[in-house]
Every structure is written in structure tokens, then in C-alpha cells.
Length: 475
Image 1 (cartoon, helix red, strand yellow):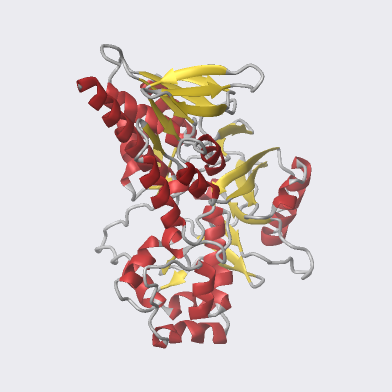
Image 2 (cartoon, one colour):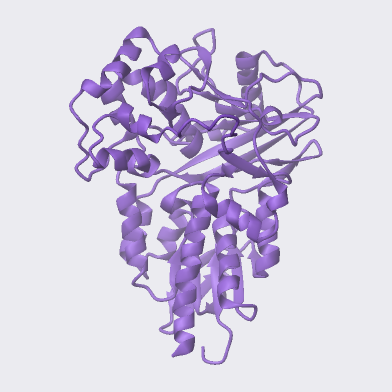
């Protein structure tokens, strides 16, 4: 590599891959060659903005955590700070035990900080269980992990788990509380328990933000971009100036002794790309395949991460359609219509026209369908899913309006499941890959499924590959 510009291949063109390409450009300078290889026909991954009745509308991730700095810093860095928008004051709700309630304040991912916060959602017996939780023997994780659902049911009984925690985790991970691990999904709670806070009620109370000062506005929790979150992807591609190769799977990754070779395209007519460094920003199943020869332990750890599929059904309703005065509704698993027979298809609705003030007419909303393991549900046709989601909407809100446009976006295997022991798997992945020269991993499998967490893994992967390449140049 003496005297020539380094060449880095970024495998995966989602937010993690594009953020890594941008950071590599910053670290390696204008002469470096950066190639982004994406097997689908577009960049962006789970950041996908489409056209719905003439409006740019997100049918993948629609927002990011504002209080985590990575996304807002990157947005500012690429000159999109003026495009940031925040949700309105509309509150979220949850439909559980046959009734729709405002999502309680003073809870952390559904874990109550006090019985008063959740009393309106529980039976008198359920409320008593919450109230008495601090009198139970202290929780001792002893460095281990535990399923969130099992812990909640053990401490609070089934109601808090089923009516609050599970719908919230289903919204974030498309997973089930009984299968998701505490350490990866609620690390703050796990840390407090490790420190000797013996009760969940006390741990959640410790997490609650201090009341705002008089007349001081509380900072927004979420943010988005006025032209859709994929405008960040477009801008990153513009600024990083990578060579973008779409519609090409990477089939094989080989170490040549002084660099890497990627076999891309079809098995019948493969193409080969040689480069000095690789950032692997792909879902767990792809990472498992590509690393099976190079880093078998890392590959095996990726193989233990399960993935869930889901779909977003976006509906544009006629102007003037009256949405409920809330940002959306989470639907607890197993809920049925008032006939007590018909199950809900959707797991959540977002009333986008209520949640975001930058949308004008028509009235737009989205329904989310699919939890881990619900494969049959997602095999239904688009028309079937739209009909089922419209029926759910009518049952919850009384809205019967015929859509003037709709979009169904399916996300096959799109959401990694942070199961019990996930933190240990990630440690195995990161420790194992650190022994392989010139390669790093990024993406939603590692430290969080949200946009800021993905950007953080991208920055770290780019820094590792750049350090390797710059070290070689100097020698």
C-alpha cells in the first residue's frame, strides 16, 4: 500500500454502512477509495422514505432518540441541522385488557417507578403486586442475564409484563418480553440491580428525570428529518463520495495476507474486488455466512442472534379525517376485538399527522404488523394486510374512511432479537473480530437497534479500519 491511496469496502448500504463510509472519508482523506456494496437496489436499509399520496413518508425507522448525541451530531456535521423536526405534544397510548389508556408517565420501558403511575391500567390485585414489589427479596443477577418477561412476572405478576412492558418492547424490537434479555434491552436497569438496588420499582424510580425547572421546557426525546430520515442517507452518500454498487450480494470474503478479496454478484458470474480494509455493516445472518471461514467463533456468535420480520402498512386518508388526539396506540399481544373473538393484526399504530406537525394534508398514519415468530401473518398479501389493518383501525378508533393511497413495506429478517445473553455474544463478536487485521463490524446487531446506536458502531468500525490502514502507511 506504499504510495497509493487505501481502498476500503463497506459491505451494507444502510445507515451503519453509510455512516462508516462518511467517517472513513473524514479519517482517510479525499484520495482514499471507498466502495459501498449493497445487495438490494437502494441505499438506506431500514431508513426508507417513500411517496404516499404525494407526501414523503417514512416506512422504516421514522425517528431517532434525540438525547443520544450520535445522530444529531452527524446530522449537524453533514449540514442537515435545519431539517430536524420534533414530535408534537400528543401522547402515546396502549390498548390492553380490552381498553385504550394513555401510556403512563413515570415508567421506564413500561417498568413502573411507582404504583400510582400504573394503577389505572391494572386490576386491584395487579396494583397490589406492584406496590409490594420492594418488600420481595432483593434481585441478585450475580453477573448473569434474565428474560425481561420472566423477571417482570416474578416481581409484579403478569399484568405489568403483558399490558406495558411487552407492547413497548414489541414496538422497538418486534420481539416478545419472554424472549428478550434484560441486559441488552434495559441495560440501565441491569446496571442499577448490579449496584445493589434490589427492587425494580426502586430502579425505575432512579431512572426518572428530575422535574424541569419552572418555565423550562423539557428537551424532546425524539427527532426526525422533515424530508424523511433517509435524507440523512442521501446526504452521507453525497458527502462521503463512495463508489456505490447496488444489487450485488457479497458471497465470499477472503484474507489475502496483505488485504482482502470480496467475491460479489451471482455465483455463476462472480466479480472480484480487492481492498485493504473492510467494514461489515450487515444483518446477523449475512455476517455469520461471510465470517464463517475467517473468524469461526465470531460467525457462530452471529449465528445465535435471531431476527424478526415485520411490515409497515402506511395509509393516506382523505383530508379532514379526524384522528384520535394521540401520537399512536401500542396493542398488547393477544388482544381481541370487542366481539372477544377477532384478534388484532397490528401491534401498533402511529398517527403520523398527529405526531408530527410538518405533515399537512392528507391525513397519514401507519400500522406495524409482526412480532418474532409470526411468519404466517406476513405471508398474507398486501391487500389482505391493508384490509386487516383498516379493520383494526376501525375497531380502535371508529375510523372507516377509505384510503386514497397506501404503501406496504415488508422488512424480512430486519430486526435482531436481543435475547438472554446477547451482551456476551456481542463481546465475543467484538473481541474475536479485533484479532483479524483490517476488518470491523457495525450495525443494529451490536449495541442497539436505533439510529444513534448504529451510527456509534459505524464510527467505531471506521476508526478501527482507518487506524489499521494508517499504521500500515507509516511503516
